[in-house]
Length: 494
Image (cartoon, rainbow, N blue to C red):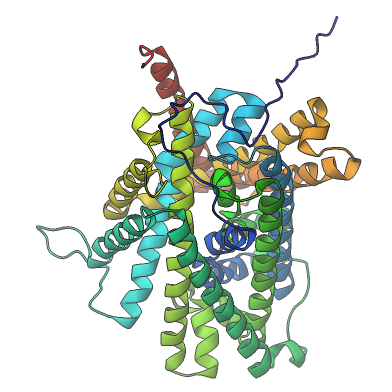
């Protein structure tokens, strides 16, 4: 006899946690446009301006370069469309953490929150803050990446990165409405800047019309010796996919969006469609201005800078540095204001110190969570280890996305009306995402075994293989398990 498991139906958006009447709560103040700006603003950082160089080196043809960006863009849109259903059903602070908890229980949700706090959120903040200061160093050469001295082994760039995080944390502690206004301004500016880059690239270049571009979807001989098409395609897709990541951050602020069941799905779809379209057009602009060989060999992988330099010699470097500063600053703001809401939600569920759930009575912002996020991200920025940690967590991040999609399917089988899973197409969206993300995750874990001379690589460079970084990422995530059980075993707080 098979006993069908029943999942309790929760009514959202009402908060089910027990709170005292006098405790301040997060307030719904954002409309769909501000939410869409958080989606787009968090997605567009520095990746679109540099990642194409590595992709071009990996696959060796313009056709495959565009196919990878198209594949990653489609996968991003599918993910956002699936999350739109969950966000409409559960528009609460915490977003993906809440989705995982509802579908699978506390342990997967805690592990996600643990990974977000220790590496994913704080590591990305550190990485983007340092990227901001690196490009500021182009305009102000005194902002160096070299250590200040042997006594102070910290670079001016790292110190300034902490300063940028401090300023944005202080500003966002004044309330989400203030943070959203800043996000709206910088998202608008970065979209206009990308449009300008695209228009210049398509208007002043001639490569697209020359007939010399290799649009083939097969690997050139130079790349074929490195591995098969599927393996290299999956490896190259990681950069494009994570250049468009953080689209899910808007779900973290679900409790602060007006009419969330309508506005969150709208924001997710419009935000991701806008960014994916801009990314595809930006790559066409690069190909129109630069031969593929110049994209592959762009100094420090700054493809956008090399492209603009062909149109504005000398001034192109300064122009692109200014655009990337705007882009990374807006990305930082969006990630910083959204991420703290996950730690707030975990504390409301008793999975973090109660202090993380405190909301300022006037600004209605989870200020303690914001400051703890700042402290850990600053430590990573100063340590210089965040880049390696981020390499480790890429695989785990994909796994969390896949598990969330499986959770949507599971909820759809139990409570289809509530989560909007009524037709085969509704199920096709998360299934297609799982297939695409699973393809990348599989090759991240096992792809090294399909490359030539993998045994020699394992013997000489094991710690830099994708197999090792994927296993290490799972290990970092699994470290949350003893923390969870130790936390649950403590004496319940009053």
